[in-house]
Length: 339
Image 1 (tube, one colour):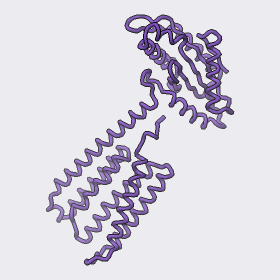
Image 2: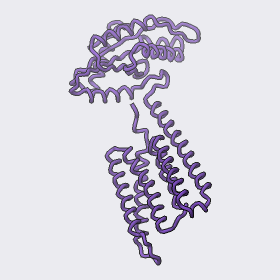
Image 3: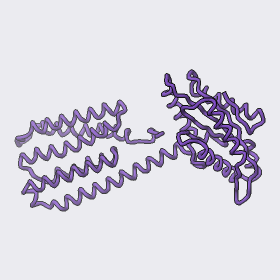
Image 4: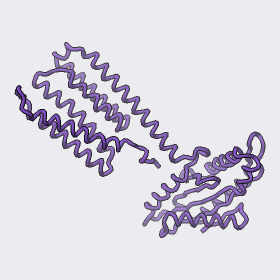
């Protein structure tokens, strides 16, 4: 599960759009304003700026509807088209100069911020090919210092690509830290409840069944009181590793809180839940936990399981499994109870 609330790029893009639209409108007013010289290609500039404004408005609209990538591609397209079409118009007017092409860096930077790395590399490659074509086919540009300009574009491209990777890496780390328990490495309660909520929505009217197992360590407080909290952490870590080996990779194993764990299974039946829970209890019973080269003694767990009945909500579903866990505790611990 990827937590989209940590991705600030949609918010940044929304804030950027009004400024970009303002720049386009100011440029349009400047083109339409009466000046002392005649602009032979004024209609071409007006059409270009109107197209850019429409693209920006379309980007704002699709972003508002939640289509982030479509909005980002349209935004980068505005910068890309604005740069090259305006250069083409200038060329027709015999204003062949590298200066307008400085704006190619705009689409590269925008792409590095809002699009995947592959898209950024495509944008860089497209700019490079167009720049080479322009230099080779425009004699007047060959007399200018085009090598320095190419180096400048290369520098911006390299810097933007590195920034792209750093941003994406940090975002992944933030997402992982938001859904992972720092001690055991398992998914946390937030991930469990969000995943269960999504699965319950998809399971409505479907044939697939969902099951959950809640479990905790019997007499866990004694480990902390007798051996210290570091030993208690070792117990939880060993139990987490055992569950990762015990359950299939399609099963979500989470630390629900304290010494309590939650397991989410899809396409399961009541009999399978019971067998998996009972076999886990048996394995834990024979588990030997070491801390500072000393055994911590016997360890047991209690499990409660529930199979979703298609009519209950998230809270009721979890509550039934919790009641089953409480029942297992009341019956003497080191056992399984369920519905």
